Amino acid sequence: MSRQPGLFEQPPPTRRTPSPGEVQPSWDSPLLEAPPLPVNIRLGTSSWFFPGWRGLVYEGIHPQTALSKKGLAAYAQIPLLRTVSLDRTFYAPITTIEYARYAAQVPDSFSFVVKAPALVCDAVTRDEQGRGKVANPHFLDPAIAAREFVVPCLEGLEAKAGPLVFQVSPLPRGLVEEAAVLIERLATFFAALPAELGRQRPLYALELRNAELLTPRLMRMLHEVGVRYCVGLHDRMPEVERQEAALRALDGDASGDLVVRWNLHRGFLYQAAKQRYEPFDRLVDEDPETRRILARMAQAAFKAGRKVWITANNKAEGSAPLSLLKLAEEIAAAAQD
Image 1: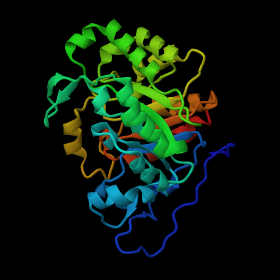
Image 2: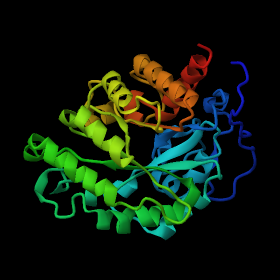
Image 3: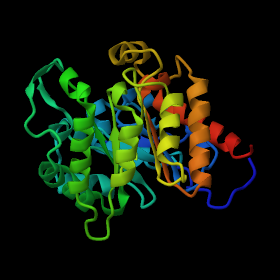
């Protein structure tokens, strides 16, 4: 790969003797061989606390609880990993102090992808098995979203806050059938969220779990309210080619940042993929076509002066860190085309 201006080059982690209970990055990780990418192309994983990533991200054996509390700083020392999806925030809001603790563990160049809580993103309340029970009275409530999510997130993460992703959970059939009404509700919701907080101008993104809503009407609405469409690769959504086409309709003027969450392998259900891929230490079902398309999208966005966040889940190919290594190589190769 020829040298490009603006490439991000972070020194590899330094080998040293760990203190008791410390989590250190892997000194011999294959991820350290990843090509440097432009500063505005950030790759990362969905969460960071997987014991199976020993030798890929972490040195030594650590339980998940230890990695959850102490692993982020080690994760962020791997030069390839310059973002991460904060998924726990979907299950319950967290405080400004908790966000600030995360921010303190990563370098200034790091940027978080943060999921909004189901409290405002799910149209129903659910039981422990995920079954919908009754209508959620807080669904798309902008006051609650601002108070419980946007404000503490921006105050805690400050400049390290990247896309704030509102992943709307699978909707009841009645709401989907009244798509025009729902899209108006979404427009009203996003328009009422804080446009700035101090020096922070939040980047809002919408991720869907109902393919029927991926329409020109939705894309026009997002363009009007200044919200990004998050490409969410999931069994409930169309394949990446159709979502790329939807983005082209939204971005005829090539404006707007690229946000992608590569959640799940094509044709797989979440639980089946989890059982097949654990402990997430190797690629099991490679998906070179998706990688190729994502690399092309990332390069196109970068060349248009946009920022890029792509996070990968272990359920995409078997091991999110190794998926990102392959993706980084594909992006570097695409830069030569």
